[in-house]
Structures are given as structure tokens and as C-alpha cells.
Length: 478
Ligand SMILES: Cc1cc2nc3c(=O)[nH]c(=O)nc-3n(C[C@H](O)[C@H](O)[C@H](O)COP(=O)(O)OP(=O)(O)OC[C@H]3O[C@@H](n4cnc5c(N)ncnc54)[C@H](O)[C@@H]3O)c2cc1C
Ligand SMILES: NC(=O)c1ccc[n+]([C@@H]2O[C@H](COP(=O)([O-])OP(=O)(O)OC[C@H]3O[C@@H](n4cnc5c(N)ncnc54)[C@H](O)[C@@H]3O)[C@@H](O)[C@H]2O)c1
Image (tube, rainbow, N blue to C red; front, side, top):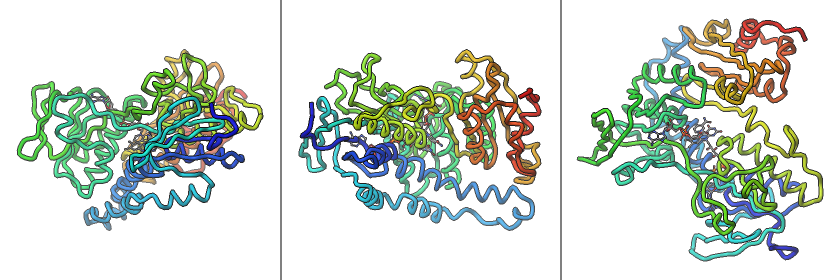
């Protein structure tokens, strides 16, 4: 066990958004930290996930928004400039150059070590350097696993040999394939199907069950209708059984007896943990790490005092902002434990990531967008809550009608009847992303429904859907 002679107070494996935030948090409180990264500082999010995907999606969204407003529509006559769209994506990823993020680590006082890290003992990490050397490092207080996740490729005959795209190849692409077969119906599948449609690919989606599982059903329905209207072929209830490459095309056999052809396949079937983290040295199984509320890794339900896992690595809420929220809780808890302070890990405590369970915010950047906070009606019922569900047509709100001609959208509010507080809210429609935070505040602050009647939305904005939902629910006495 490392004691006074340890190399650093804290060692963080993985310099994605979560690892960077965790390291920053401990350094700000006077501890020393090293961060180990084997690819680019900034992680999946900055180079192969959130940032390039949103950069690719935005131009098409803006074009459609203008075309949805009479008077503006007439001025938008040309096609998207696809080369400019790709160039804009490149500028957001700094052309996959992480020097600015490296400079930031330096300015924050965090030491960067390039290489692949793995836990090799109690408070010990071994780094395999890019040159193939090994370096053993020790941590005085904590090791934090912030290694994110990687695309899960199903074990399907011929699929790997066909060299399909994951999010990585898709988001680095220099050009769009003529045709793209997307396997999966989750968030990555829906967002990237739209992005490549805008870039000119003919897109087919192979969706085993519904679209956007885990969200309110209206989200998948409205997003699916819009994708179809824009020309995506969605084959629901169909699974691939085998893949071949023939004459430069991918051929995919399906369980409905058909064979589909595409120039490229995008696998968007979920994520898996990074392998080779050395968990076996601690007797832990490979897989997503289970953690307590301060992100300490649990071994048979008991926390390992010095080992933390935050972000995708623990799979509690695999989203950048929720992972960074966990990093703030974990970083502060590490510092409090190291410096002899008290730790407040109870619900909504300063060292607890309670919102992961009760108020996580998610935005799907499809067109229409989906913004969801907290639980779906189904999840709330499964958790045993006595709920009332209120639905409202977002398109009938004056602000939405002005926002776009023929605005189509939906809103759902899930109220816990025992406590008279909202536990879930979902908005679907053009530009609803910015409505999410209003719901996050209402849900995290557990504002009673009676008090919400005093939070008056401005007229004519889309936020007026709040008033309509409350009217449909009824006005409880305060
Ligand atoms: C296509 C796509 C789009 C997405 N869009 C959004 C979005 O719009 N909004 C959102 O909130 N979330 C989005 N996500 C999810 C988001 O990308 C992740 O939740 C987020 O990146 C998690 O951050 P992280 O720091 O935990 O992991 P990562 O960003 O994956 O970073 C982990 C880092 O650790 C490094 N690493 C891994 N193993 C080792 C090792 N052994 N040694 C050294 N370094 C290692 C990796 O190279 C990487 O740099 C998207 C995901 C995908 C796939
Ligand atoms: N805007 C955002 O915030 C955003 C965007 C993209 C991704 N993300 C994050 O990344 C995570 C991963 O996204 P994802 O879309 O890869 O995963 P997902 O879990 O959301 O969806 C996976 C999809 O693949 C299907 N699937 C799984 N195995 C399959 C198989 N063998 N054959 C056919 N279909 C199969 C599932 O039914 C599901 O539709 C999300 O959970 C989300 O947290 C967030």
C-alpha cells in the first residue's frame, strides 16, 4: 500500500470529460493528481461522440427550421453544403488534435501521462507507454477509473469481417457512403441516421424492437415518423442474422428472409466497458463497475476505500453531463476523505450523485428533439410510485405555433401523487432541448405542484406548455 512516498495523491485513468473534471476537482483542493490517457485528452465525447455528432446535425436542423416558417422558407432554396458541414465538424474536433486540452490540463496543474493504465495492486497503477515501456505509479489517497466505454459490436457471423462503422469511424468520416445500414434503434442510431441522411446517404435502419427504448413511447413514435418522412427506411422487428461483403457492398441477411445491401454498416447497438483495467487483480469481475453514491467501487456491496469509478465506466447514467456531475461528487468526496473533512453522501448531499437516479437530464438531438428529465411513467410505476400522467400536445401552444408552421410535438408530465411533485418530464419537438433545464430544476428541487402554478411562463413561448400541463392536472391547494 502506498503511503507517504506515493507518487501522487490521486491517479485518474482516462482523460475524458469525467476524468478531467475529477482531477480538476481534487487539484483545486490542494491534492496532486496525474491523469493517464491512451488516445486523446478530451475523450470519446470531444472527438467521436457528443461534439462531432452535434456539429454534424446542426446545419440540417437549421435549414429545416427555416423551411418550416413561411416567409423564410422561400429564401432557402439551395442544398446543404456538405463539404462545409464536414469542415465545421472538423473545426469542433480541432481535427482530432488535443493540444488545447493538454494545455488546459497543464494550466490546471494536472500531470498528463500518455499510455494505457490498469490497476495493478492496492493504490497502484501500471501504465504501458506508447513506446511499450511500463511505469508503476502509486497513489496516496485514491485511484479513479474514468475510462468511459466503447461501442458494443454484436457477435454476428461476418459482421466484424465486414469492418462496419462504430460511432468512431462514422464521426471521423471524410465523406458519406452512398447507402448506410444502421443496426440499432437507440440514441446513436437515431441521431446518426439523421446526420448521414443530411450528408446525402440513403439510410436504412434495422430496428430489433422500438425506437428510443427507455424514453416515453411518444419520443420514438415522433422521431420515427419524422425520419421516415425525410426518407429513412425503418425496418422494425427485424434482426440481422449474417453479413457478407460482395462486390464492394455489404450484404445483410435478415430474419424476415430478406437480404439488404448497403455501401456501409453503422453498428449502434449500445456500449461496453473498456477491457484490461486490471480489475482481476482486485478480485473484481470485468464489466461495468458498481459504485456507491460517492462513486467508490463496491466489492460484494462493500466500498473499496481508495478506488472510484465515474462516468460511463459505472454505467449509472452514460451521459457527459451526468458523468461530470459524478466527477464533482467523487472529486469532492476524495478531497474530504483525504483532508479529514466530513462526507455527506445521503440523498442530495454534496458528495452524492443523487440526480443520476431521480433527475437525470437527457436530450436526444434528433429532429424533432427529445428532452427528458427524471423518470418515464413506466419507470415511476415500476419504482412503486402512485403517479398521475398528464399529456399535452405541444403543437397547440401559441409559442410553438409561432416557432414553426405546423409545429408537431408532445409533452408528458409524471406527478408523484403522494408528494405532489413532478418525477418525470418529457418534451418532444423542434428546439425543446432548452426546456429540459426548467424540468431539471422543478424535479431536483422537488417543487410542489401548487407552487409551480406561481412560476409563470412568458407568452408566447413554448414554455407555456408548463401552464397547459398544470391546467390539465388541476390546481392543488398549497
Ligand atoms: C455517438 C455518441 C454521441 C453522444 N452524444 C452525447 C451527447 O450529445 N450528450 C451527452 O451527454 N452524451 C453523449 N454521448 C455519451 C458520452 O459520449 C459519454 O457519456 C461520455 O463520453 C462519457 O465520458 P467519460 O469521460 O466517462 O468517457 P469517455 O469520453 O469515453 O473518455 C474516457 C477516456 O478514457 C480513455 N481510456 C480508456 N481506457 C483507458 C486506459 N486503460 N488507460 C488510459 N486511458 C484510457 C479513453 O481513451 C478516453 O479518452 C454520446 C455517445 C456517443 C457514442
Ligand atoms: N444526445 C445524447 O445525449 C446521446 C447521444 C448518443 C448517445 N448517448 C449515450 O450513449 C449511450 C449509447 O447509445 P446507443 O444508441 O449506442 O445505445 P442504446 O442502448 O441507446 O441503444 C442500443 C440499441 O441497439 C439495439 N440493439 C442492441 N443489441 C442489438 C443487436 N444485437 N441487434 C440489433 N439491435 C440491437 C437496442 O435494442 C437499442 O435499440 C446511450 O445510452 C446514451 O447514454 C447520448
